[in-house]
Image (cartoon, rainbow, N blue to C red; front, side):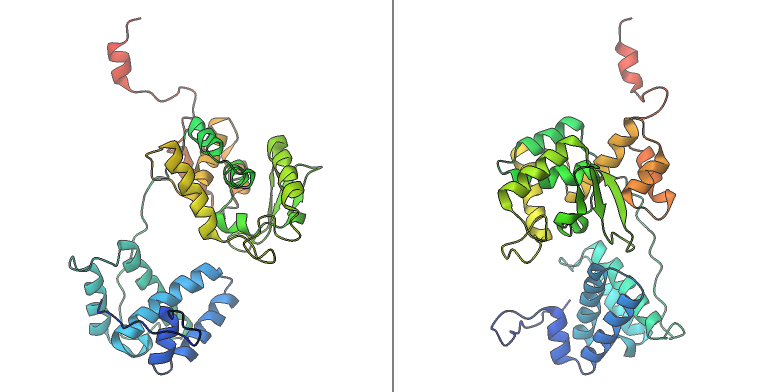
Length: 308
């Protein structure tokens, strides 16, 4: 992608790519605001809106025109450029989300019949990374601050997405029933998950020490929740300290939660409800990574050299 000169907003901070598109591309601000409104009304998450908006702004800046005014050749040239080996910055994910963003934009603008065909993108069939139980314990033990231990413990102990974690409020915790109320998770669905004694004790100690008023985990400004970037830093630091070589992210703790529950005997339908999945097919992936069944899977090489 051709380099775009960085501009600055009125406060002197670097402008985002969306801000630059609003400043430089005629009609983009109106298109973008309409796009955000339609996404919100459709019940899509804020992160989806932000992600799609960046990709639409990127292509608008590249051509200096609205994406809805592009023809087939321009779209294909742009996508081919993203795929080109000479392009170091755009990843496979960037390429896919460009297609997703354009497809959604054309749909909400009523341009499905536009003479622009977007290539189909197949879903990745990747199995999740799962931590061993002793690796989870090591991550928790590596944290010196109670708050950091609790962040990791909640993501693993309740299977929380990072957005659900930072969105927790003090009144979402029911210590007496040992339950956690997760409000407006993915798909804008509420659900309850069990906390257990250890998490309840940890939360009570955290509340006693930090005295949060609204958010269970507040940011630098007590009136605002902790940022997802801050949580990611905690997890990355824990992985670094423990020396775990797996590709661990915050979501890995959620994957490990589901897999360990399955291995401990909980049925797949209960796990589906605890995770807040819409479709059972999404949950079934954990059957492929769990050591579950009447006979625990093994390597035949061990039996080949085992002396009975």
